[in-house]
Length: 89
Length: 252
Ligand SMILES: Nc1nc2c(ncn2[C@@H]2O[C@H](COP(=O)(O)OP(=O)(O)OP(=O)(O)O)[C@@H](O)[C@H]2O)c(=O)[nH]1
Ligand SMILES: [Mg+2]
Image 1 (cartoon, chains in turn green, cyan):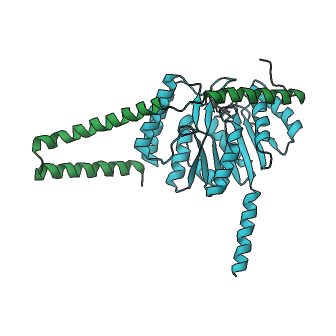
Image 2 (spheres, protein in one colour):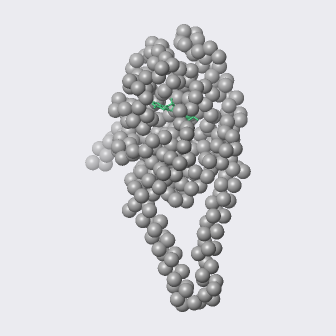
Image 3 (cartoon, each protein chain N blue to C red):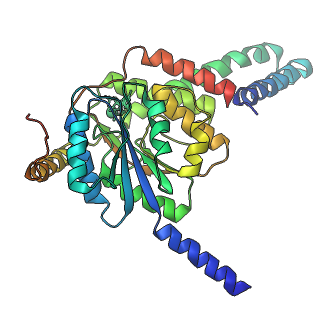
């Protein structure tokens, strides 16, 4: 099944529940009308939160850059010994 | 009967032990990097049966001369140069290299040292432990990481990832990374159904693979932004990415 259909299915299910709520009016109607807006706002907040958290805890590795420089130096030494062109800085 | 099966199992085990790996490296103007990465690959894969397949798209900077020098040192059977006359793009470069691969597994990595060969053993180990069809390197987990990105780059990367995770449910944490190990037949299967370019190509590969039900595992990698040479992906990347996302929503 194409993924878009899954998402449509999910949306359809949510709409069905919503219409059900409207029809049966278990909760006051005025609340039910607002629910989709809440849903969209929640989704937006979730997205922003995830991006924010991701940024805050973005894994960085400055020590890796240092290690890489060492590896490059080591490789250079070997390659120059084999007369391979590694360019000049 | 049981004994026979045991022998068969053992045979399989032995085959796994001696599995051959083809390391596929596309290059375009990587004269300064290619020798370094080849040295590091040989350093970190001492007891492994492997070949390096370099697909160079007629780099004008003399990348191929360096590769020929490397062949003199390491042997033409270990380093295969499968060049193409001109710059034909990354996706087709993988496909071209794959045609010449003789390994049971194919490892794809960039030549620019963002993908450090020291992680190769962990890819291989992970595959052996789990029997996965694909092992993909992921930057966004513990022990993984990125160095050298500014805030803007981090922001786009996080945003793109959250968007893809929410819309595609791919089951993989790092969709656009391209440091991966594939079972050869799996790569052959997946790559033929992929049409995207650039970052989207990497995403399409892994999404299609999970949809097809292949077993995907992840290993942490660190990613140091390129030191030498210049980036070839640029321009309207974000727009391309969004288009790719929609394309994947409708076709996978
Ligand atoms: N054969 C071939 N290789 C390519 C082509 N474009 C890029 N490559 C190689 O593909 C790898 C990844 O390309 P990069 O330019 O590093 O792309 P990137 O990692 O997204 O961008 P950076 O920020 O520059 O690291 C490198 O090894 C390049 O040399 C191409 O058209 N043909
Ligand atoms: Mg790169």
